[in-house]
Structure formats: structure tokens, C-alpha cells
Image 1: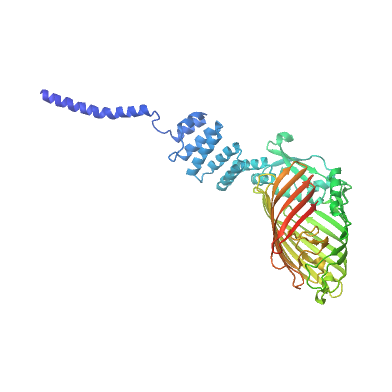
Image 2 (image 1 turned 120 degrees about the horizontal axis):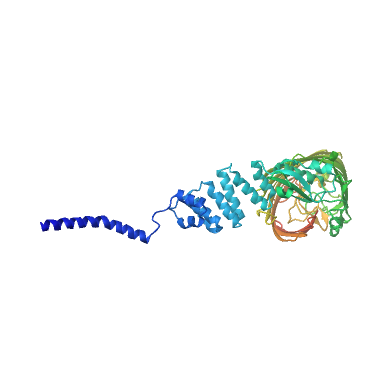
Length: 581
């Protein structure tokens, strides 16, 4: 009996220990780790919505096993406490787990914006919009960052997709002297309504066509500052620098008129006659090898900034040296004298901010002297006589990406005319151009990079002054900066011909800018080839000219470009200083 009781008691004790031991172990483990089990997403959300951000942070942790939504709430809680770097890390953890969730891109952008990493913020907002193009918050946020960057065009490109912004007024500071009736016609922007990027670009093209506003800016003023009734409305501010009489002021006028004295040149000018954008520009040069007198008059047709009429008269007497570029004469032509008188008119039309065109007609009379020993087959290049020429241009902006500050502009030029001298006749030419420009920084022109590619051909009986030339010279825009266009001050040193290919690549680093003077320095590379069916002109294969250019602009008006380049095939070096206005 006692043995039976002892066996039963022993069995009961074993059973009790088997039941109680796991509970005791669990209790001991619980005492060592009070966070018994991970909180649920619903619990974390409830804590976040209750404003218990510190508790959310203490109950969450990052890691591969943590759900992406927990990372999201952790990042949001850290952001509420302005712990932006930690918030960024939490959002990055969540993004790695759910790379197709646009919410993480948006929240990352918010943290990066607070950390002043605007480039990363913009990149993440663009990624969010690729995943969710209808997200109005991201679009407004992205537009606002561009606006704060000073890139109004990029801001409008984003805001316009949501039908914003609305403007209630256009204010001018200061008020231009130009007649208000002309200025109003230049604005394609509606006074009341949405400010659209394409309308602003068209407005800028029309203002440029007037020729009296060398510089201007547009800015948006929020509604509360503009005294607007609509909370989301803005006032558009137009802040121009206007040229009247001599120029924008006496310093600008003096600088522009006499800046060419080192070239033995002055530029008489007068702007905005009768407050109607009627402008007079001139050039007078007394260089013994390049005498020239030019005068041009422009005005908007009927007071409409979309149409601009230009009339000009040009007379020149020049000495040319063709000893290095013409192979059809013995002895070499080193003392050719060339005279030309020309008068003409041109009409320019601005159709929109994307494209414009112009058409012009001119009459010219030319005379050649000191032409000796020229082969009969080459005589047509030096034939005196008169000609009539029609010329047309079309300019079209193929691509404009304001967010990345990239533009691709194209142009096509065609001309057709007739030389009335004996043995001559019809002539013509076509030229095509593509220019790519990129500003890699969010604002300003630091590291401005451009590539321009051009090609052209001429046909018919052209005289030597009508040929293309590849070289650096003030009155030639086909620059190959390793080859001087003049020799001992005389034109004709650069390769000539009727067929050419040219491209110019350069990048400019801003060295100094104080509002009055801007200085840039950067490398360049020009490459080109020119030929002529006659065989008397042309280059010996491709010409490659690497170099460097220093650019200085004073008062945002007159510029000086000093370039140094080496022509690789001929091993010649050219240092050249050119004035831009």
C-alpha cells in the first residue's frame, strides 16, 4: 500500500514538473526579453497617428526581416522629429524591399530636400512620377524645387500638367519706355488664366525680336504678395533692361559704341526711336586693309513684335591675300583688292517660341583689282559685276528639356541669285545646322557645354567673296580657331570652297562673376573640312584644332573672347581676340 502511494506521488510530481518547467522557462525568458513579440503594422500605424513618434521609433528597427511598411512609418516618425538623415536611411531600407512603390521615392525626396540635396530630391520625384504620373503632390513638389532653383521653365513644365499656375496680373519693374500697345502685343501670356510654358517662350521670342531688351527676367509672386483674390494665383513680374537712345544707360552706350577702337572700329547706334522699337545700328571701320561702312534700320511691322523689318546698306574696300589658299594663279595673289556695295531688306517672323523664319532680298555690286596671272578656268571667281540674291532661313527648336537644361536647335538656310556679269549666271547655296547646348548645374552657366554641327554646299558661278571659309575672322561665323582668317591684316588666309563640314565643341567654366563682369574659361575642339569642285580652293583633308578660350563679358553687354588653338595638320598656332556685342 505504501509502495503504491509512493509510486503515485512520484508520477504526480513528474507530471507537475513537466507542466510547470516550460512555463517557468518561458517566464524567465520573458523577464530577460520584455519585448515579447514584434508589434503589428496596425499597432505602429495607430501609434503614429496618435503622435507617439518616439514610441514608434523605439518599437521598430531596420533589417531584412522588417516589413517595408514598418520602415515607412519609422521614417515618417523620424521625419516628424526632424531626424532627417535617419529618416532617409529608413526610407532607403523600405525602397530596397519595394522598389516599385512610389511612396518611398516621394518620402525620400522630402528627406533629401530637408538635407538640401536638391539634385537627389528631384531625381526621386521624377522616379515617383514615372510610377504614378497622376500624383499631383509629387508634381507640385517637383515644380516647387525647380522654382526655388530659379528654373522657372522647368517649374512650369511640371505645374502645367496640373493646370497650374494661375496668374491674375502682369507687372513691369521698371515700366519700359516702349509703347504699351507694342509691349502688350509681345505678351502671348493671358493676363487672367494659366501661365503656360509655351506662351512664356513665345513671349520671350517676341521680346527678343524687338531688339530693345538685351536682358530681362520673369518671376512669379505668390498670391498673398500680389494681393490676388484666388489663393493659388500668382502675379507675373517682368523685369527688363531696356535700351533707349545710346543704350541701357550712358555706360552701356559708351561701351557699345567705342568698344571696337582696338579694331579701328566704332559702332554708332540709337535705340527705340519714338518709343516704337525702331533701332539704328552702324559700323564704321578705317583699317587700311578692311575699310567698311554699314548702317541698318529695324522696326516691328505695324507695331507687331511678331514681324520685324530690316533695311541695310553696306560698303567695303578690302585687301586680300590668297597666296596660301588659291592655287590657280602665277604669281600668287597676295595683293587682291576687293570692293563691294550692297543694299537690301529682310523680314523676320516669330511664329512661336519654337520656330521662326526670315526672308530677304539684296542687290550688290562688286569689283576686283590687281588680278594677275589667274588661270582662265579660275577667272569667274574674280569677275566684277552686279548680282541679285534672295535668302531665306528657318530656325526650329527640335528639343527643349528645361528640367535638365538641354536644348537642341536646328536651322536651315537657302539662297538663290544671279550674277549679271558675262560668263557668270545663277548661283545658290544651302546650309544646315544643329546646335546642342547643356547647362549641367541647376542654375547659372557654370560648365556650359555646347556642340554645333554645320554643313553646306554652293552651286553655280560664285565669286570668291561668296565662297565659304573655315577660319577665325570677325566677319565669318564658320570658325576653325586654329587658322587665322587674315594674313598681315588681309583676308583670304583661311581655306575657301563651296562645300564644307564643320563642328565646334566647347565647355566653359565660370571663374568670376560680380554682376558687372563675368569671366569664363574652358577647352575647345573645332574640326572641319572644305572643298571646291574647281580644285583651286579647299583644304587638304580634315582640319583638327584643339585649344582654349577665355570669355569676358562686361555689364552683360559687350564681350571679349580670347582664344588660342593649334591646327594639327599644319602645326600652326593662332591667338585671336574677338569682340561680341
